[in-house]
Amino acid sequence: MALLPHDARPAADALFANPGSRRDLAVPPDEALDVLDEGGLAEAARSIGAWEGYGPTPLHRLAGLAAAMGVGAVLLKDEGGRFGLGSFKALGGAYAVERLVARHGAGITVTCATDGNHGRSVAWGAARAGCRCVIYIHEAVSEGRRRAIEAYGAEVRRVPGTYDDAVRKAAEDAALAGWKVVSDTSWPGYEEVPKDVMQGYAVMAEEALDQAGAAPTHIFVQGGVGGIAAAAAMRAWRRFHTRRPALVVVEPELAACLLASARARAVTSVAITEETVMAGLSCGEPSLIAWKVLEPAADWFMAIPDAAAAPVMRLLADGVSGDLPVVAGESAVAGLAGAIACAEDPAMRERLGLGPESRILVFSTEGDTDPELYARLVGRSAEEVRAAGNR
Image (cartoon, rainbow, N blue to C red; front, side, top):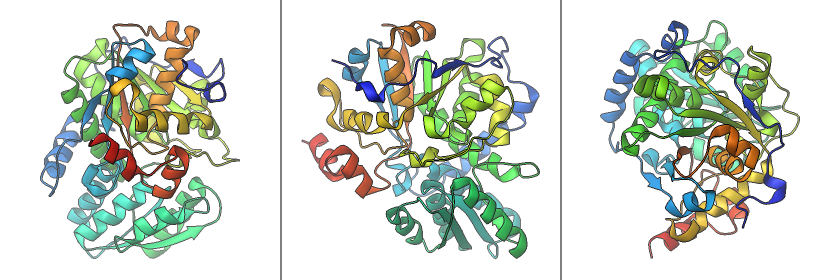
Protein backbone atom coordinates (compact mmCIF):
# COMPACT_ATOMS: atom_id res chain seq x y z
CA MET A 1 0.00 0.00 0.00
CA ALA A 2 1.29 3.47 -0.90
CA LEU A 3 2.31 5.69 2.01
CA LEU A 4 1.40 8.88 0.16
CA PRO A 5 -1.98 9.32 -1.58
CA HIS A 6 -1.92 10.24 -5.25
CA ASP A 7 -2.62 13.96 -4.72
CA ALA A 8 0.27 14.17 -2.25
CA ARG A 9 2.91 13.04 -4.73
CA PRO A 10 5.23 15.66 -6.23
CA ALA A 11 5.42 16.47 -9.91
CA ALA A 12 7.74 14.42 -12.10
CA ASP A 13 10.22 17.29 -12.36
CA ALA A 14 10.06 18.18 -8.65
CA LEU A 15 13.50 16.69 -7.93
CA PHE A 16 16.30 18.86 -9.29
CA ALA A 17 20.00 18.02 -9.25
CA ASN A 18 21.95 21.03 -7.99
CA PRO A 19 24.40 22.12 -10.72
CA GLY A 20 26.45 24.01 -8.12
CA SER A 21 27.12 20.99 -5.88
CA ARG A 22 30.79 20.48 -5.02
CA ARG A 23 31.01 16.89 -3.82
CA ASP A 24 34.58 16.83 -5.06
CA LEU A 25 35.72 19.15 -2.26
CA ALA A 26 36.75 17.61 1.07
CA VAL A 27 36.58 21.02 2.77
CA PRO A 28 33.86 23.64 2.19
CA PRO A 29 34.92 26.74 0.26
CA ASP A 30 36.00 29.79 2.27
CA GLU A 31 32.74 31.64 1.58
CA ALA A 32 30.77 28.85 3.27
CA LEU A 33 33.24 28.51 6.15
CA ASP A 34 32.85 32.22 6.82
CA VAL A 35 29.16 31.59 7.54
CA LEU A 36 29.46 28.53 9.78
CA ASP A 37 32.94 28.13 11.24
CA GLU A 38 34.06 25.54 13.77
CA GLY A 39 34.76 28.12 16.46
CA GLY A 40 31.22 29.46 16.19
CA LEU A 41 29.75 25.98 16.60
CA ALA A 42 31.95 25.28 19.63
CA GLU A 43 30.81 28.51 21.29
CA ALA A 44 27.14 27.82 20.53
CA ALA A 45 27.41 24.27 21.87
CA ARG A 46 29.13 25.49 25.04
CA SER A 47 26.59 28.25 25.69
CA ILE A 48 23.45 26.28 24.87
CA GLY A 49 24.76 23.27 26.75
CA ALA A 50 24.85 25.41 29.91
CA TRP A 51 21.19 26.46 29.66
CA GLU A 52 18.85 25.00 32.26
CA GLY A 53 16.98 22.03 30.83
CA TYR A 54 19.40 21.37 27.97
CA GLY A 55 19.69 17.84 26.69
CA PRO A 56 19.89 16.32 23.21
CA THR A 57 16.46 15.67 21.74
CA PRO A 58 15.66 12.06 20.74
CA LEU A 59 16.66 10.41 17.48
CA HIS A 60 13.97 7.82 16.71
CA ARG A 61 14.76 4.77 14.62
CA LEU A 62 11.58 4.09 12.64
CA ALA A 63 12.08 0.50 11.54
CA GLY A 64 8.48 -0.02 10.42
CA LEU A 65 8.51 3.05 8.20
CA ALA A 66 11.93 2.11 6.80
CA ALA A 67 10.62 -1.32 5.81
CA ALA A 68 7.55 0.22 4.17
CA MET A 69 9.83 2.57 2.20
CA GLY A 70 12.21 -0.22 1.20
CA VAL A 71 15.26 1.37 2.84
CA GLY A 72 17.62 0.25 5.57
CA ALA A 73 16.84 2.88 8.19
CA VAL A 74 14.84 6.04 8.81
CA LEU A 75 16.34 8.18 11.58
CA LEU A 76 14.06 10.98 12.79
CA LYS A 77 15.40 13.79 14.99
CA ASP A 78 12.42 14.82 17.16
CA GLU A 79 12.54 18.51 18.15
CA GLY A 80 9.05 18.62 19.67
CA GLY A 81 10.38 18.77 23.23
CA ARG A 82 13.20 21.31 22.79
CA PHE A 83 13.26 23.53 25.91
CA GLY A 84 9.49 23.33 26.16
CA LEU A 85 9.13 25.61 23.12
CA GLY A 86 8.16 22.80 20.78
CA SER A 87 10.66 23.34 17.97
CA PHE A 88 14.31 23.47 16.92
CA LYS A 89 13.96 27.25 16.65
CA ALA A 90 14.56 27.40 20.41
CA LEU A 91 18.24 26.89 19.61
CA GLY A 92 18.59 29.76 17.16
CA GLY A 93 16.73 32.92 18.13
CA ALA A 94 17.33 32.61 21.86
CA TYR A 95 21.05 32.03 21.34
CA ALA A 96 21.30 35.07 19.08
CA VAL A 97 19.53 37.18 21.72
CA GLU A 98 22.01 35.97 24.32
CA ARG A 99 24.88 37.01 22.08
CA LEU A 100 23.37 40.46 21.46
CA VAL A 101 22.83 41.09 25.17
CA ALA A 102 26.43 40.06 25.86
CA ARG A 103 27.60 42.66 23.34
CA HIS A 104 25.17 45.50 24.08
CA GLY A 105 23.62 44.92 27.51
CA ALA A 106 20.09 44.07 28.63
CA GLY A 107 18.76 47.56 27.86
CA ILE A 108 18.23 46.72 24.20
CA THR A 109 14.97 45.96 22.44
CA VAL A 110 15.06 42.90 20.18
CA THR A 111 12.68 42.31 17.31
CA CYS A 112 12.00 39.92 14.45
CA ALA A 113 9.40 38.72 11.99
CA THR A 114 8.07 35.20 12.34
CA ASP A 115 5.65 32.55 11.14
CA GLY A 116 5.50 31.45 14.80
CA ASN A 117 8.38 29.34 16.07
CA HIS A 118 11.30 31.73 15.56
CA GLY A 119 9.37 34.53 17.27
CA ARG A 120 8.63 32.27 20.21
CA SER A 121 12.35 31.54 20.55
CA VAL A 122 13.31 35.22 20.38
CA ALA A 123 10.64 36.12 22.94
CA TRP A 124 11.82 33.33 25.24
CA GLY A 125 15.42 34.46 24.85
CA ALA A 126 14.45 38.06 25.63
CA ALA A 127 12.58 36.94 28.74
CA ARG A 128 15.64 34.98 29.88
CA ALA A 129 17.90 37.99 29.28
CA GLY A 130 15.52 40.60 30.71
CA CYS A 131 15.24 42.77 27.59
CA ARG A 132 12.24 44.15 25.70
CA CYS A 133 10.92 42.23 22.70
CA VAL A 134 8.64 43.22 19.78
CA ILE A 135 7.58 40.48 17.36
CA TYR A 136 6.00 40.98 13.91
CA ILE A 137 3.63 38.40 12.45
CA HIS A 138 1.88 38.45 9.09
CA GLU A 139 -1.83 38.14 8.50
CA ALA A 140 -1.89 34.34 8.06
CA VAL A 141 -0.19 33.49 11.38
CA SER A 142 -2.70 31.78 13.68
CA GLU A 143 -3.98 33.31 16.90
CA GLY A 144 -2.66 30.24 18.72
CA ARG A 145 0.86 31.03 17.62
CA ARG A 146 0.36 34.68 18.53
CA ARG A 147 -0.70 33.75 22.06
CA ALA A 148 2.27 31.43 22.44
CA ILE A 149 4.65 34.32 21.67
CA GLU A 150 2.83 36.73 23.97
CA ALA A 151 3.12 34.20 26.80
CA TYR A 152 6.82 35.12 27.05
CA GLY A 153 6.07 38.81 27.54
CA ALA A 154 6.67 40.01 23.98
CA GLU A 155 4.63 42.69 22.24
CA VAL A 156 3.20 41.17 19.06
CA ARG A 157 2.30 43.31 16.03
CA ARG A 158 0.33 41.86 13.12
CA VAL A 159 1.03 43.37 9.68
CA PRO A 160 -0.56 42.83 6.25
CA GLY A 161 1.00 40.56 3.66
CA THR A 162 3.38 37.62 3.85
CA TYR A 163 6.29 36.58 6.02
CA ASP A 164 8.66 38.49 3.75
CA ASP A 165 6.55 41.63 4.20
CA ALA A 166 6.79 41.18 7.97
CA VAL A 167 10.58 40.84 7.68
CA ARG A 168 10.77 44.16 5.88
CA LYS A 169 8.47 45.91 8.37
CA ALA A 170 10.44 44.65 11.37
CA ALA A 171 13.69 45.86 9.79
CA GLU A 172 12.22 49.28 8.94
CA ASP A 173 10.82 49.88 12.43
CA ALA A 174 14.01 48.64 14.05
CA ALA A 175 16.11 51.07 12.01
CA LEU A 176 13.91 53.99 13.13
CA ALA A 177 13.78 52.97 16.81
CA GLY A 178 17.32 51.65 17.26
CA TRP A 179 16.20 48.09 18.01
CA LYS A 180 18.24 44.95 17.36
CA VAL A 181 16.85 42.66 14.67
CA VAL A 182 17.15 38.95 15.44
CA SER A 183 16.35 37.41 12.08
CA ASP A 184 16.85 33.86 10.86
CA THR A 185 17.31 35.23 7.35
CA SER A 186 19.91 37.66 6.03
CA TRP A 187 20.18 40.42 3.44
CA PRO A 188 22.96 42.72 2.20
CA GLY A 189 24.68 44.28 5.20
CA TYR A 190 22.91 42.05 7.76
CA GLU A 191 24.80 38.83 8.42
CA GLU A 192 26.23 38.63 11.95
CA VAL A 193 23.04 37.78 13.87
CA PRO A 194 21.74 35.23 11.33
CA LYS A 195 25.11 33.46 11.61
CA ASP A 196 24.51 33.11 15.37
CA VAL A 197 21.01 31.78 14.70
CA MET A 198 22.37 29.18 12.28
CA GLN A 199 25.10 28.11 14.71
CA GLY A 200 22.31 27.31 17.14
CA TYR A 201 20.70 25.12 14.50
CA ALA A 202 24.07 23.45 13.89
CA VAL A 203 24.00 22.22 17.50
CA MET A 204 20.90 20.17 16.61
CA ALA A 205 22.52 18.79 13.45
CA GLU A 206 25.65 17.81 15.37
CA GLU A 207 23.52 16.04 17.99
CA ALA A 208 21.76 14.06 15.27
CA LEU A 209 24.99 12.94 13.62
CA ASP A 210 26.41 11.94 17.01
CA GLN A 211 23.28 9.91 17.76
CA ALA A 212 23.08 8.27 14.34
CA GLY A 213 26.09 6.02 14.87
CA ALA A 214 26.80 4.83 11.34
CA ALA A 215 26.80 7.63 8.78
CA PRO A 216 23.51 8.41 7.01
CA THR A 217 23.56 7.91 3.26
CA HIS A 218 20.89 10.58 2.70
CA ILE A 219 19.68 13.66 4.57
CA PHE A 220 16.29 15.15 3.68
CA VAL A 221 15.87 18.56 5.30
CA GLN A 222 13.36 21.42 5.17
CA GLY A 223 14.05 24.54 3.14
CA GLY A 224 12.41 27.77 4.35
CA VAL A 225 14.98 30.55 4.04
CA GLY A 226 17.70 27.89 4.14
CA GLY A 227 19.11 28.18 7.67
CA ILE A 228 18.45 24.68 8.98
CA ALA A 229 19.43 23.09 5.65
CA ALA A 230 22.72 25.01 5.61
CA ALA A 231 23.47 24.00 9.20
CA ALA A 232 22.82 20.32 8.47
CA ALA A 233 24.80 20.49 5.23
CA MET A 234 27.83 22.07 6.88
CA ARG A 235 27.94 19.60 9.78
CA ALA A 236 27.74 16.65 7.36
CA TRP A 237 30.45 18.15 5.15
CA ARG A 238 32.82 18.80 8.06
CA ARG A 239 32.33 15.30 9.43
CA PHE A 240 32.27 13.14 6.29
CA HIS A 241 34.08 15.27 3.65
CA THR A 242 33.73 13.84 0.12
CA ARG A 243 31.90 10.80 1.53
CA ARG A 244 29.16 12.95 3.04
CA PRO A 245 25.48 11.95 2.75
CA ALA A 246 23.47 13.09 -0.24
CA LEU A 247 21.65 16.22 0.93
CA VAL A 248 18.12 16.86 -0.40
CA VAL A 249 16.48 20.22 0.46
CA VAL A 250 12.66 19.97 0.50
CA GLU A 251 10.25 22.91 0.18
CA PRO A 252 6.51 23.42 -0.32
CA GLU A 253 5.55 23.97 -3.96
CA LEU A 254 3.95 27.25 -2.84
CA ALA A 255 7.23 28.63 -1.45
CA ALA A 256 10.10 26.99 -3.30
CA CYS A 257 12.61 29.85 -3.33
CA LEU A 258 15.67 27.63 -2.86
CA LEU A 259 14.67 25.37 -5.73
CA ALA A 260 14.19 28.48 -7.87
CA SER A 261 17.64 29.70 -6.82
CA ALA A 262 19.23 26.38 -7.75
CA ARG A 263 17.57 26.43 -11.17
CA ALA A 264 18.73 30.02 -11.77
CA ARG A 265 22.16 29.42 -10.17
CA ALA A 266 21.65 32.66 -8.21
CA VAL A 267 19.63 33.81 -5.21
CA THR A 268 16.07 34.06 -6.52
CA SER A 269 12.86 35.15 -4.80
CA VAL A 270 9.42 33.76 -5.55
CA ALA A 271 6.06 35.41 -5.00
CA ILE A 272 3.90 33.93 -2.22
CA THR A 273 0.48 34.03 -3.84
CA GLU A 274 -1.06 31.43 -1.52
CA GLU A 275 0.05 30.47 1.98
CA THR A 276 1.28 26.91 2.41
CA VAL A 277 -0.09 24.81 5.27
CA MET A 278 3.57 24.25 6.19
CA ALA A 279 3.58 27.68 7.81
CA GLY A 280 7.17 27.70 9.00
CA LEU A 281 8.35 27.19 5.42
CA SER A 282 6.28 29.98 3.84
CA CYS A 283 9.32 31.97 2.70
CA GLY A 284 9.71 33.58 -0.69
CA GLU A 285 13.21 35.02 -0.24
CA PRO A 286 16.29 32.91 0.55
CA SER A 287 18.78 33.91 3.21
CA LEU A 288 21.89 35.23 1.45
CA ILE A 289 24.30 33.58 3.88
CA ALA A 290 22.43 30.28 3.86
CA TRP A 291 22.74 30.22 0.07
CA LYS A 292 26.51 30.66 0.38
CA VAL A 293 26.50 27.25 2.07
CA LEU A 294 23.75 25.53 0.14
CA GLU A 295 24.93 26.40 -3.36
CA PRO A 296 28.01 24.16 -3.01
CA ALA A 297 26.69 21.81 -0.29
CA ALA A 298 23.22 20.72 -1.39
CA ASP A 299 23.01 17.88 -3.90
CA TRP A 300 19.31 18.06 -4.71
CA PHE A 301 16.36 20.41 -4.29
CA MET A 302 12.73 19.33 -4.46
CA ALA A 303 9.23 20.74 -3.99
CA ILE A 304 6.27 18.89 -2.50
CA PRO A 305 2.54 19.66 -2.64
CA ASP A 306 0.70 20.88 0.44
CA ALA A 307 -1.39 17.72 0.32
CA ALA A 308 1.65 15.74 1.51
CA ALA A 309 1.80 17.32 4.97
CA ALA A 310 -1.26 15.87 6.71
CA PRO A 311 -0.81 12.25 5.54
CA VAL A 312 2.77 12.19 6.82
CA MET A 313 1.71 13.79 10.11
CA ARG A 314 -0.83 10.97 10.47
CA LEU A 315 1.71 8.29 9.53
CA LEU A 316 3.97 9.48 12.34
CA ALA A 317 1.10 9.82 14.80
CA ASP A 318 -0.11 6.29 14.06
CA GLY A 319 3.33 4.69 14.00
CA VAL A 320 3.98 2.41 11.03
CA SER A 321 4.17 -1.30 11.92
CA GLY A 322 4.92 -0.78 15.57
CA ASP A 323 7.00 2.40 15.35
CA LEU A 324 6.77 4.80 18.30
CA PRO A 325 4.07 7.44 17.62
CA VAL A 326 5.62 10.87 17.00
CA VAL A 327 3.88 14.25 17.28
CA ALA A 328 5.13 16.25 14.30
CA GLY A 329 3.69 19.57 13.15
CA GLU A 330 2.91 20.55 9.60
CA SER A 331 6.32 22.14 8.92
CA ALA A 332 8.12 19.28 10.64
CA VAL A 333 7.25 16.65 8.06
CA ALA A 334 8.48 18.28 4.83
CA GLY A 335 11.81 16.44 4.79
CA LEU A 336 10.22 13.08 5.55
CA ALA A 337 7.46 13.69 2.99
CA GLY A 338 10.16 14.31 0.40
CA ALA A 339 11.96 11.11 1.39
CA ILE A 340 8.79 9.03 1.18
CA ALA A 341 7.89 10.56 -2.19
CA CYS A 342 11.32 9.70 -3.58
CA ALA A 343 11.22 6.18 -2.16
CA GLU A 344 7.83 5.53 -3.77
CA ASP A 345 8.68 6.98 -7.20
CA PRO A 346 10.83 4.55 -9.22
CA ALA A 347 12.60 7.27 -11.21
CA MET A 348 13.39 9.43 -8.18
CA ARG A 349 14.41 6.35 -6.20
CA GLU A 350 16.90 5.40 -8.89
CA ARG A 351 18.28 8.93 -9.25
CA LEU A 352 18.99 9.16 -5.52
CA GLY A 353 20.29 5.60 -5.21
CA LEU A 354 17.74 4.67 -2.54
CA GLY A 355 17.68 1.00 -1.60
CA PRO A 356 17.89 -1.56 1.21
CA GLU A 357 21.25 -0.20 2.41
CA SER A 358 20.13 3.44 2.57
CA ARG A 359 20.10 5.20 5.94
CA ILE A 360 17.91 8.32 5.78
CA LEU A 361 18.18 11.13 8.34
CA VAL A 362 15.26 13.57 8.66
CA PHE A 363 14.46 16.38 11.09
CA SER A 364 11.03 16.65 12.70
CA THR A 365 11.53 20.31 13.44
CA GLU A 366 8.40 21.00 15.53
CA GLY A 367 5.73 19.34 17.58
CA ASP A 368 2.17 20.65 17.88
CA THR A 369 3.16 24.32 17.95
CA ASP A 370 -0.38 25.10 16.77
CA PRO A 371 -2.43 22.55 18.75
CA GLU A 372 -5.74 23.38 17.07
CA LEU A 373 -4.33 22.99 13.56
CA TYR A 374 -2.51 19.79 14.57
CA ALA A 375 -5.73 18.21 15.84
CA ARG A 376 -7.59 19.26 12.69
CA LEU A 377 -4.98 17.78 10.34
CA VAL A 378 -4.30 14.57 12.27
CA GLY A 379 -7.82 13.88 13.52
CA ARG A 380 -6.90 13.78 17.19
CA SER A 381 -4.94 15.88 19.64
CA ALA A 382 -1.26 15.63 20.34
CA GLU A 383 -2.12 14.56 23.90
CA GLU A 384 -4.04 11.58 22.52
CA VAL A 385 -1.12 10.65 20.26
CA ARG A 386 1.35 10.84 23.14
CA ALA A 387 -0.95 8.84 25.38
CA ALA A 388 -1.13 6.06 22.79
CA GLY A 389 2.67 5.94 22.72
CA ASN A 390 2.85 5.54 26.50
CA ARG A 391 0.60 2.49 26.68
